[in-house]
Image (cartoon, rainbow, N blue to C red; front, side):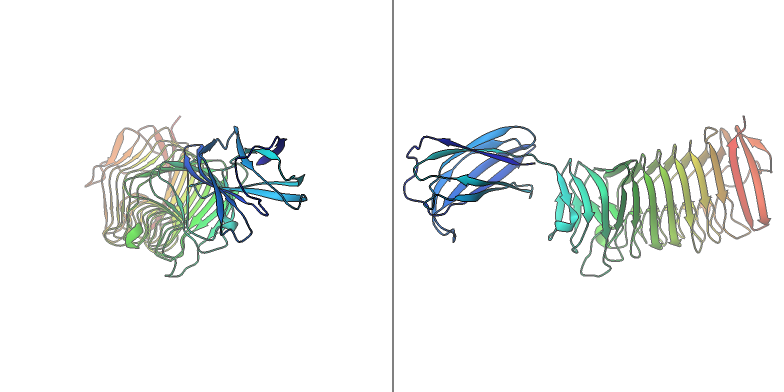
Length: 445
């Protein structure tokens, strides 16, 4: 907490006049963790119309050091008052230092020792204007006003019981959180965080095209949109139509895409970079047409490569033709590589559990390594789609189980059978009808 210490010293005539009132105002320029105090103003009365002194510069290190600010003070009333020093740094944070119950005597000279401690915590409930959050800050609280929250390029920001429930109106065209460049979001242990986009064409969390968002930590996150935006990724609006790469290293994450958008990936007709999941408990679903993890729906919707090395992951398309992991209807995605984790992927009508969606969708090569814990893939209803591979009326690259190629991009060179072992993976096939298969792969040993 900020502290002040007032110490009496012999008076020195460094300022003229008798001050009936004063307020010491300090403006600052912030560079890294140093605040360069560039201006200190002393006023003669409460209206603050007449400035009588100008001091500076003084350097304050908010994290640790104390710096002495010296000024001549006269209190004609010779009473016990509360004096406040207000420091506003260029990063927008304000620090108030108060000392009460001190009698300032006329003709005495005082040292003011100010110690600033920057807690680097922003309570969203206090924000009344758009805010760009800098590196090292923690966000907490519920966003009360309809303002845009951005994360600065290169920043690492911690979420500590954050609630952003975006209001669905064209007057608020932005995501719940907008990452302006490479960014890391840490989900603080034991916390529950909710981030929903504002206007329907914007995602819950957006990362600028060509940049990388990394999510880690052990807390919980629920990310969603109000319409055609992904839970985490891109949206339909031009400003957020193309997003960068997404890396998830941990956390308990639920990501929901609404109409024609992926849970994690691209929004309606939008694009997304590579998606990498290395750990965490992840539930990603598209409510309509998009993939749970991958691309949204419609022509032009795409995502890069999808790589899963670990974690417990449930991905699904709830309704109408999207893949569980892969592409949405008429969308595309790059290669899908799963080398670890416990995976459950469920498609909707005509889509592949892992692979492409229905109706002109495509995906790259699909590889399931024999190092996974378990992979369960369930296709949507249909006769020409596969649990792992292409959706109905769609295409995919090769399908590889371990080091064995099952599908060469044109034909199935080896048709999986229940109980068969391929490339070090044993497959179980359950069938509720000829049009609805579930393939379960485990290491053969």
